Image (cartoon, rainbow over all chains, first blue to last red; front, side):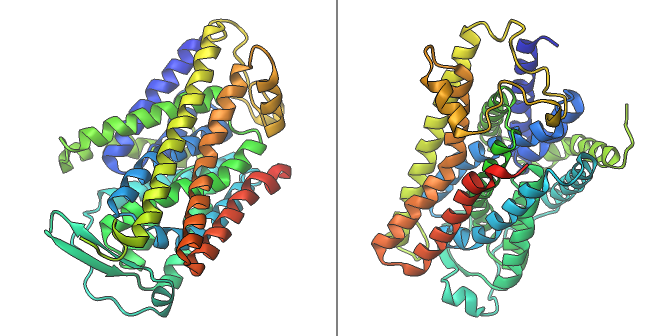
Length: 282
Length: 142
């Protein structure tokens, strides 16, 4: 494939990954790694390096918007990001140690879970009274936001902080190890374990994703895994695609439309798992 | 409406400042990256054999492509040349993008100190320390 065509092709693929990622709420990173490795034969490490850059690009834009609206809780985010950055540094350090097949297998499983988490019917109602957690009280892991849909101010406070913090470390390891944002895992920790409202979990996760990815990006850079001629078209493509996808979301917030993408996700996840097990589909 | 943790009041100040840093940091980084890419294409390097993508599908241990920079010194050397090395400019943009969240955390740290919120100033300092560790100390990894 001529170089110009290659760059144009991965740019357009990244736009597509950004659109689908935004519509599904998965983020572009977890899709771009299997796409680059499966269809373009890009080495796993370069794909992960490009992905981690695209994750930071999309997170910066989204986080800025969420912070302005007050939906993203910066104190909760910074408190938990202590765990995710530590995990990301551990995960990124492991990339050179874990064989590529192992990375493919873990990525396939992470993609499967993320897709499952996205497609399960997420509860949009806010959590009721939660048990008082001394750590949440001590560190003021609480807040309030005006919910336009519910037409009231929702006041919330985190609970099970230790469990959430531990889960965040795991999400950070996955982010550093695979070059992904691992947003689905961060939302899971905040929503399910810490009982924060879904909107706050999603918005705060967006803020945390960029910081977590930034921690491992330095490791990827110094190891030579960030190839500018791959990372630039991928980052720009995912950024443009995510913006388009977010705009499209307002028109097509339909579960059936989301379901259309399910076979694509299933195919990518299965391909990665099989490759991780040493089985090539083609 | 002023509610704790929402966009008004002292906590809103941190969020607004960090939000602006993330937005403009992202815009500036993408602009630098895009400029480097346009210069690279304008030099005709996308159409010739000089595009260093030949090793993109190989394991990095088989030889680092010339287009891959692994230290800030490589980037500075590339930028100091005339004409400027477009790949160095692209890498500068990527590094600026990667550093944008760290600048956001630094902004949060400064604002928490100004607001007298010692707990969160310390937490922001810990996060910033972890990010700096990733950039500088891990240089020997791999």
